Amino acid sequence: MIPQSKYHRTTPVRQFDLNQTLYTTVFEQNINNMDVDAIGFLGKNITFKELKNNVDRLADAYAKIGVKDGETVGICTINMPIVQENLLALSKIGATSKWIDLRIKGKDLVKNINESNCQVLVVFDGILDAIMEIIDETDVSTVLVASPKDYLNPVIKTLANMKDKKEGKKITIPKDKRIQLYKKFLKTGDKNSQIKPVPLQKDRIAIIVQSSGSTGKAKSIMHTEYNFNASMQKEAYTDLQFAVGRTMHVAIPPFIIYGLNNSIYAALAFGMKAEMTPFVSETTVYDDLGKYDFSCAAPLHYRYLYGKVIELKEKTTLSGDGENVSNDEEKQALLELEKIKVKLSRVKAFVCGGDKISDQEILSMEHIFETPIINGYGNNELTGAAIISPVYANKPDSVGIPMKGITVATFEPDTFYMLNTGKEGEICIHSDSVFVGYLNNEAETKRIKQTHDDGLAWIHTGDLGYVDQDGYVYITGRAKRLIKREAFKIAPETIENVILEMESVRDCVVVGVTDVEHNGSFVPMAYAEVNEDKANIETIKADIMKKCQEELPDYEVPKYIECIEKIPYKNTKHNFKELETMGEEYVKQLMG
Image 1: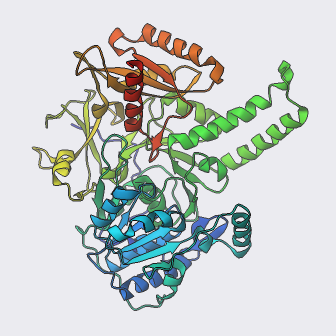
Image 2: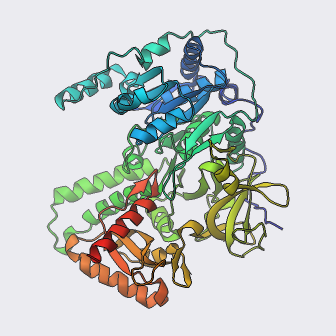
Image 3: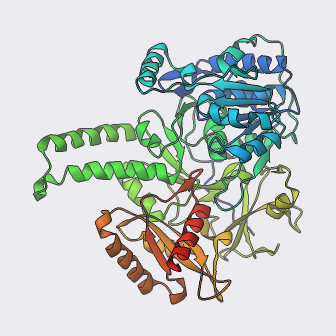
């Protein structure tokens, strides 16, 4: 018997009709809140009424150029209001939105456009040059170019233009009939259009996002509108205090499911304002502090905020210890700390997902922030978060409990044999919000989404872990990341957890690299991002090795240890592939 959690709400904060499209869900749920802000963007607010006008106008403009049910529009943008406008306008007319990673270029960009037969692209102006380099290799007939400046108030827009002119920044729109300015295209539509919203087709592919590609080749993941709304109903049963008029900070870009669904669409569905930041940076949660009630971000965002607070606290305590800190510097640090404290008092919860964060980190952050850190777990195939920790009732090292209506169990790897409570196996998840499949990749779809003997479709996450007697889920490793060292199988997380206990280590990733002494075998290589001065690197490496030798069996002790300035990320997750490549190159250099 799979445990069911007692920590869900008995009554949801909002009741959703799952038989509606995204368009009808948002505007019918918020029919009485149309004057409430739906979007915040660099000082400008857009109400639900204003958003609906733009969405209706955009849907009409799309219809006039022949975009309709069954066609796909590619969208490649940073976080800005064109995200909400296109998500809902394409829903209204029954077209599919494909969210393309704005960092991919060349052949990968061509592949993403052509595999979905995107004849219309919506792009932000910062990547127009990359689009022009490949456009002739596609069937694209229309490129709609949007600028963040389109949404700025006049004063800020003038200042932004002056800054760009001073820095020599200028984006030139090529004289090509395929290229149109988004703001002009929007004006071709009628906000009073008589186009009626299409009814829900439960199995229609409405949204396509990309997998992160951090552990394998990136794939296009297909979702329905029913998937998105079903996930919202599940969020409505959590103990997060979502309510009309509150604000969700959007730190994750829209081509990642956590950004598009759990941040952007969630804000719309629950009648909240999405505070959009166009900057893809680890500083965004810190920079926008005070503007929001909730944030859905990655560990790197919260680590930056935590580091800034610790840095300021240290400045306020050094002057009494003979350090060279002026009174003015200490006063400034005290003032800044007080400002941060006031801003933090508004935050009701920091939701953390996308990559691992240790229990010790959460405790340290909660102590400093005086704000709950909510752990989340899920992936693109699960429409984002599937497991989330209760605000005030989480267990150490657990990623939380399944949301209401989601079933989590462990299975013997590569089998359909369900394990008992407390037994480690592959984490598998069943829900009505899981993806339809991978675009043009049936074989991979069948590998990840498997129908078991119980007749249910289960998502095989590839993560190892167990479920305790109260329904809490624990992740112990990644099946795909297991390092095969001779006769042993090593979970990198075991080594990482030991190294992360050291005060000098800020972040750590362990990967497998070729064992030159045993053909076909691999050895662990640890990458550590450290807090200390570079002059102490060799000492730190020696300390890491000593700790591993003391606390780990011989076969788990890393063969190589490297300290690097910044561990690479891809889509808010550690980029294991890049680290593995770096490791193999390191081994080659050692061997001459």
